[in-house]
Length: 387
Image 1 (cartoon, helix red, strand yellow):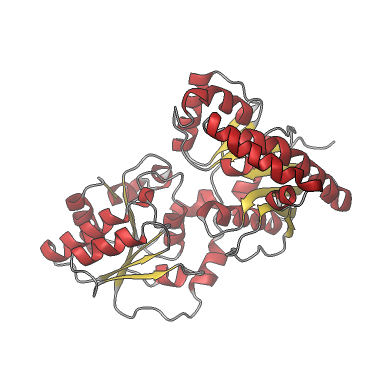
Image 2 (cartoon, one colour; image 1 turned 135 degrees about the horizontal axis):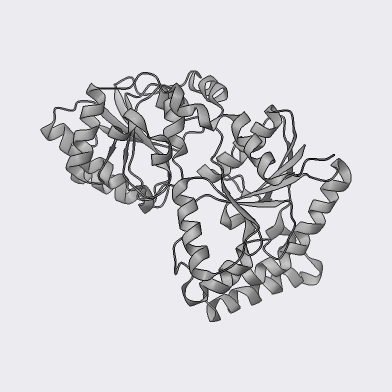
């Protein structure tokens, strides 16, 4: 099969990382795999291996269009967005969709027609919403809430999702989409739940890379420094555990983002500078995760929770606060006791309890996330077998 994965950019981020992983998964399963991205960024993830890579540069194409018409259209779209709230994607998509269609046809002229084209994330299919094709599959990565777009949500939802093939990556994401569809009454072609792949072999190889890291035993967390990741809660719980529960391990938080100042202020306020470390963005975080005593996730919402799965691949135990999304899809059996309330004391107690009573084998929790199972699910649900 010839498959294309389409993503907005290859900038550092969980969704972009999964797009690369999925393209590599199809390649490893013997399919001709292509990865298409729309926007160039200064900081890009490493390109996938054994995958055809295509940069469509949709925004750059607008700027460079004949007589500056694309730039003029962008200005018009920005003005209309002020007049009609959250409508920018409508007007920009009207311009970028034909560019996308033309570039896609050029790729297919060179390589042949695609059997399946998978778009990752709403920010990606926002950009080309006017284009319809039965081969398109739109993958929802996160929960969708009613009134996200205000009074025009019904119109916007129909533009994006009407008569599309939809995939949700977890039960939580699936339920939120079903609720929106039921509320706003728009038809779809098909909606199934297919989770994200995780390449255990590749992750373990990366985890064994020799890096300079802290030698002191530590707990770890990672993610964008964004309010949704709720790192201040983790730091507060860590401080409580040090003061009241005899926790002596250091805390390492990998990542960058707009909340760095707030996180640093929380660390300073709790007098934790000697014990909490912020190394920044690490291109290969897996050795850090492998050598940690525990990975802790405190997100307020988590579409799936890939970093928890990756931690288990690295052999590192996990704790997560209870949140809407997908963590309960795989934190089953004895792992259900590793979920706690998003509360300082409960989290602190859970961290110390799991450190004292770890799980040593995570094999059964990872089986549903193999490359073979995920790629097969896409093909069985969305590709008609040729006679």
